[in-house]
Length: 385
Image 1 (cartoon, rainbow, N blue to C red):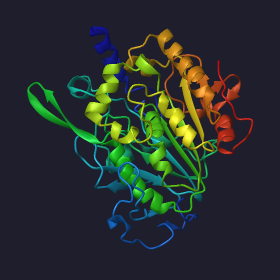
Image 2 (cartoon, helix red, strand yellow):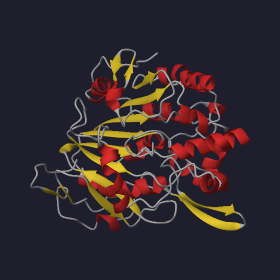
Image 3 (cartoon, rainbow, N blue to C red):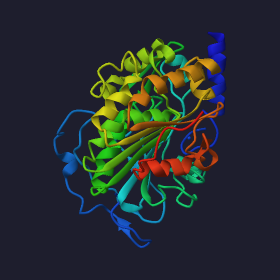
Image 4 (cartoon, helix red, strand yellow):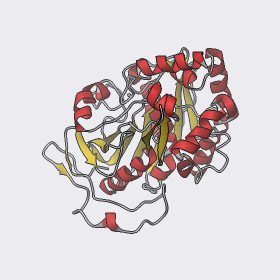
């Protein structure tokens, strides 16, 4: 137990890795510098319409976002919340009216009083305008969100940055109460509820999207995978892809049963996952197959180093144990899916989308590989050691 605590302290101190978009390690109609983006019509009262399906698959639309082209703009969402109960929001950068990239930020996870309030193994709120202004240059520069990055296949896309401050892999739907030294403290694990609020307005803005990329790193990689199908419901006619960077849904007890049970008990992650995958509670590695089978024309990818130090610490694995679990996930689960491929590199680095120009697997550079993925190139396949 002591080694476990020390390891998680180390992870929390380094903030889950180095610079990455939103890793603390962290379409829009209209283009042109003089355009103000509002969607393809005037705001309506769509937000007041009754839900056409229960959480997380409600596709009722809210008001379109109204943000200027040619820059990133922070948008407050009063109906969203960070762990501390403060409201958060999203950052938006308009681009091609038909193309959209959504990026989920990372930053650890927590599931009890010790991890949430003692070790602080997940980033805390608030995250609003001030935090975006302070971090935006670091988040976007040289990352997948950098329009000037040479070879970035998503440079022309409209972009949405989803911050992370709920400690639940963007997958929670609960306000937990933890006993901290005899004091009851609430923790808003409401990441999936936030995503649902965001999507009501994002989908109302990109009503004509033809190409949609759902991406994320670390906790955000898990979030991209877990929220993929509910987001997909908003864009039934679009070509969609999913890029899970360093959020591997390892099989069976490679993710400790105690952690998985806590996700369901404290985050209510089952509200998000159970409608997608009935047998994921016992084995989260079943989720890729469930989603990929439902959308056989969508392309999906997992990026990871073989011995990812951050992920193996959270799951209490040795370096060799992490590599074995990751390779087993690939060979036993993912290789059977024709539309799901992997980009694996040697070593123990954590996350790639913060510096996608810096990674090569099996002689293939990451950005061209992502370009093959997004363009439906028939030569796109798994690469790595």
